[in-house]
Length: 104
Image (tube, rainbow, N blue to C red; front, side, top):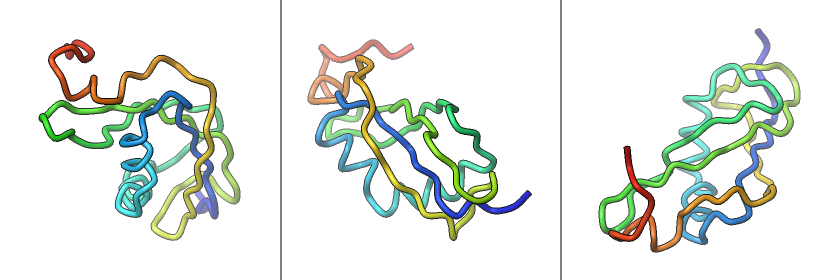
């Protein structure tokens, strides 16, 4: 397989400011470079983005929008983001409170 030169990933517009900050950090881009492997356009992945100050986790549905070059993401692949339609992700202070989403 050949390496992807650029992969565009989208997150939902209702992702909280804190969630967006976590996703767009250089360390999270590095995490994606290490873990995505082979990708296809339209693929949806739930990714853990962090633990809030109260200890609850936030998983975000990331979708692969575009893949340029080959299919394999490596440490040289550029990761870019765009925002897509809302999907009901619960990621503001609610993810860090007792009133937040139920964890199974």
